[in-house]
Image (cartoon, rainbow, N blue to C red; front, side):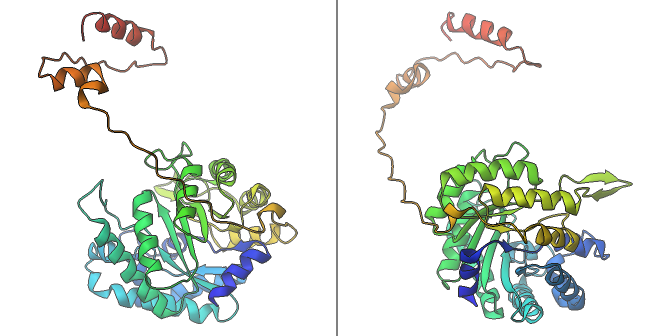
Length: 359
């Protein structure tokens, strides 16, 4: 079955399923529950949701294991059940899919910061991802989907961990902020190049934002790499209605954007938070007569960028401030408060005056 995913990509558009968490919440699973554990405590509910997505036309269904890593499960006192939750999540999805669809092992971020942003080492992060991947592999998944990552370094550790245990296809997806950039200001084209260099079979974006922002990001990614690209947007931005967060983007709206995604160069399409089997069914119907962009039939891995030549600059030569500090001289530093509006003239005048006063 592993080759089936790559073959489907070569043949045409691959349709993934929609949100699992949204469906569990709508079924009465409270937000303070561990959604991944529901696979053990209420497998029939998870199975029902998988079947609904299959009936809607999904080619790929994802396991209910997005947050089933050791660190996140520990918050619920379930870290000792890490292997069991992932194993059963994969087996349940495999049983439902049978030979009619592919099963993707869903893996999300660790829920904490790793180096250089936090105390968790790259090696430990890689080990935790490998641990989750091994259980999903044993459960019978056909591919892995790394999704909703904000930190490029973290998803790199996930890729390394998975590649050490098998050669199954990997879809690597980052998430965007409302400005169309990654959490740390990374351009979509930049992380597409990095993920391709790290040998992800498909690079993509998912979650947080709706179709419009994702289409703009997709257009940048297509220009940066000639690799299969996946798009899994939220059903818009949730609105608070009578105390509940409701996603208002209709299935028809999502389906229209699915056509635009294909025209822009996407090869794998699905849904994230707020999307339901109704959204996936509408996308499935919309894509029946849509063909992928021809020039993206034969993806290639980009040639890794050469490491830049770094020339060490003596501290004394870096700047006026650095020069003073290097010589042990007194330095005057002034903080300027940003303007409250759009007019920066006042700040520029103040900076000019300070520059003339030996700051």
